[in-house]
Amino acid sequence: MAFMLESPAFPNGGSIPRKYAREGANLSPPLRWKEAPPETRSFALIVEDPDAPSGVFRHWAIYNIDRQRDQLPEGTTRGAKTESLGHGVNDFGNAHYDGPQPPRGHGIHHYHFRLAALDVETLKLGEGARVDAVWARARPHIIAEAELIGTFESSQPNDR
Image (cartoon, rainbow, N blue to C red; front, side, top):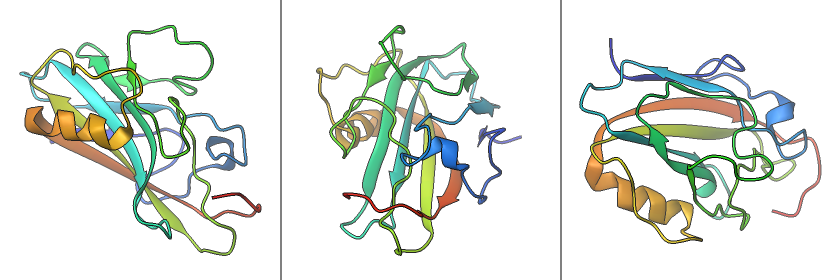
């Protein structure tokens, strides 16, 4: 089998439930993966919306995910930081998950959850590194990448 990322909350290509959106509870969805390459030493995860009117909009990045993990529970990075995970600053300006929030009336957006298996234990990034900087630092260390795509269409007005 190939390296695979999935969520019990929505199928690949399916609709992301409202509780995982900014207009809902803004919780990160539960994620799990399997068949990571044996030489993996850590993981990095980003979430991007390529359908945003201003170009790719980055919603989340976490890195230095321990090799022994094979899942992230619902609500990871919500509240006080209690784990050694690195947190990238998203395009909302927050160092935590911010779920889907496409402009009202803009149609369905596609959210790409990308998990990279890395050949290093840690990515050394400074406090406040943005999501794109996290991915740029991870890119040369990627052994394998798994992707899960969810869709969402907003029903609320917003400020994005």
